[in-house]
Length: 208
Image (cartoon, rainbow, N blue to C red; front, side):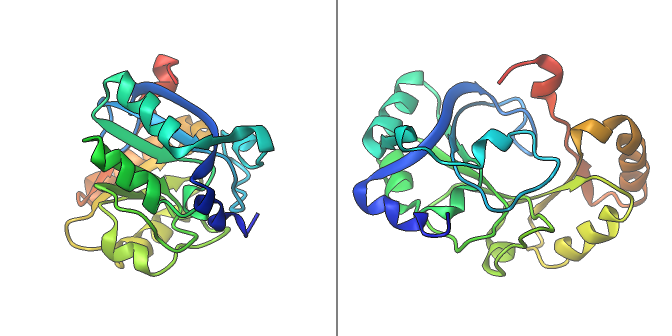
């Protein structure tokens, strides 16, 4: 899948799904947003809750103009590009087109590939399996660390040290371990108040 960044030359991207909902987690939780989930991922987190996004099929490719048109028609002011791992692709064309339509662009990424595009909000969620490119730390608006075990707190601090002083720092329990890890996250944030807690509210509400 490593060669997919050239697909943008055809002005198409592989879209696993796209939908209008509320942002369920992170700094913009509760805000209406149109989600565009790109297919393809090589990061391979074993606890990923969208493993069906890892592979790409020929029938998933959509014209960028079509993607932008359906997002615009929804009435949303914000578009979130997620995955999979969206930075596998060149995102310059799609973000430029969204901006021409007056839409704000957000991205959720592990930062595993070189940055492209023009985004109004960058959520960096680094993964141990394929670490971020160094360029992401200075441009990230939000650092979201998934806490799976106790050692992830120290791992989170290492990434936070690399981010800009205005970056929002978030700790979010892996969904299947939420009962175990959220009490620890609460206690950790009380001792380290530079951090905030992120909760996957969309899963509790059972919305996309």
